[in-house]
Image (cartoon, rainbow, N blue to C red; front, top):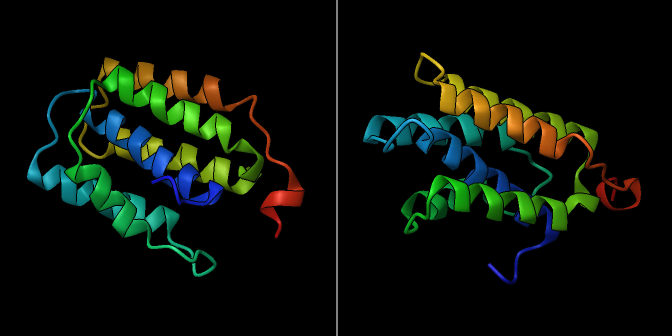
Length: 135
């Protein structure tokens, strides 16, 4: 992970964040893993990226998992550290990813709603620098 670019770090972090959301209401079952992959890959896929989003997602799914809280905190820290690359479009995409993961298996639980609200509040003040994200 150390050799990842800031943009890859952001994608890895939102993958972790989305996984925390998926886990908020309990263990992620096989069917949920598939749905999770479809949502993330579908929303984050871009021809402009020189990295494979699917590979990042599978690394996340296959990792030994920490608590939802630890995962959230790690991911939010990574997003903050790499936020100079956070374009308004990417920020919007991240919010969309989180919402779709929360809604993937209705109903949206209280835990998922709280996590979504927290994520919106935490990412809202972050604004990237066009010098970085328009390269």
